[in-house]
Image (cartoon, rainbow, N blue to C red):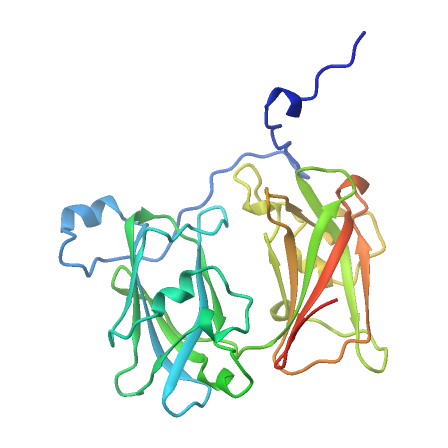
Length: 312
């Protein structure tokens, strides 16, 4: 009997298989903060139609990290209902002091040290600048990602320290403290051992200059995508990113592993973030053991520090 023709040869995109400790299909929660509309062009009737959706986002930049007269950001991303980055090509963005260049924070070039891809404006604490983002239509949103200003060690003090976030004109998050541009170790998971849809790890250990294992906290870690729980057909799977630093690495139990989806033309990434320069003597990576084909095959390490970016 001849072998069947591969799906790719027929021009068919294979369907992502379900993966879960408990097979379950659940709706993505669309609960967000209560909202009201500030744009006079949007009537009360429209307000009723866009309840629990974002139309206008404001961010007041209340203070910086010490710069006397300027404040800035490197990047801003909005996350959709499933954790995906929302396309901002059609949005309008402006700043209250009418200075130009604020659109740079939406250009997607967030892991950079180039001031040409960052935005800076004058700062007066009595009249703090306010960034406004207007979406062309209501969107569901679950969060935002911010990258602070870091063109140089000196200019990192122009980064935003405290911000107020408003959704549709109503305060959503007050006195949000932003991290000063930090030292970042980024791991890019370039390929798996055969699985086309998922990639994962059991754990990661970092060691300091005395060769002692570092005790990492959740605020030191970020992963994109965070886990398979961003998928619409997955809810409550235990294989989340914090398992990477729970120090239970040499085992086969899924509740101590991390698994994330693979997307076309994008590699999964793990970030270790430190507020001060941090010496790391070595790193131990424990590969995914539940399904070996989902383990990481090729990996790269990029270090972003106050002085430079190094690709290891």
